[in-house]
Length: 380
Image 1 (tube, rainbow, N blue to C red):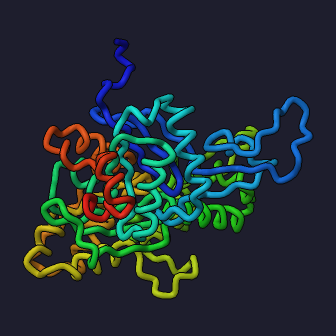
Image 2: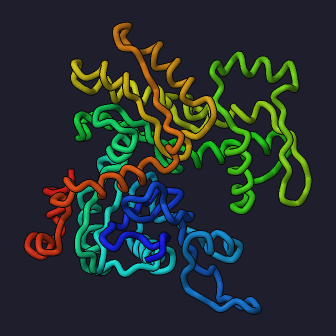
Image 3: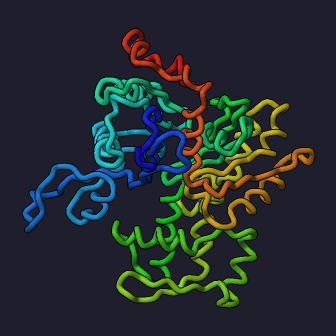
């Protein structure tokens, strides 16, 4: 058997983010495939020469043809909002990307904390009825991230493309009453950077150009340790300025926009959020909603997860803000695993490979006996 063939008994791990789908096989150390979590439908009848008309495009193909398509994101702020499109994304994942028969492998899906009950049931039904999976497990994203970091207790700050969550986990179980959500994440940082660049005379605003802005953010963006001080020095010298070459060959110079874009994670007021509470407040609120006896341990195990936590400087800034807000007897430690972009997926891969996990799967027999509501009993 070729080394690139997954183990015959391995499960499919599918982490459906608001921005990116990450999928692969349990026991492996990284996802096999990643593609944009987007579905496109033609705006008009395709009369383009040499373009065979399809009524649906998924992922990177939809992104590439976005000029003639109407794009939609089936996962908004971490929650599935369009099941037809979600089914299309799963079909594309299994058939075209992983090229597997789902009737032969257990499937592990990930979900946002406090995912609505109806959504959990719908996903369960689709996997067993439409994709004929022999077994299924639905795992909370933050819990998987914590496992991947080698812990069973801690508070996970998961910042993806569409949503940020602070999720306290104690001995392997998330504490739903203390979960906090903020609808500010990577996409907002990109859009705010686009706005700042427009103000600076560089107009990159349509969907194709936003991909360029996202690249600028990922290559040059960072989080300031002290925003006011950074702004002062940026305005008095050009040391922070970096050049970025656009696809057309033109060069743009980017200065204070590099860290001003990321500041909305800590202070989202420029985005119209009245409260102004950012990710540091989100974390602190979450910890304070937990029993006083576990707060110290939680603050000592703050784990970063999700693509947006790859921004340089985010761990140091969080450490500073949390230390200022935490009781003196609670030393803060922020852990930023290097693989945090895929931490949820890696946690799923690890969990599904454990011999002790074998009895956790929802089996086909259990589904046939109890129906979709079995998910609430087996996956929590």
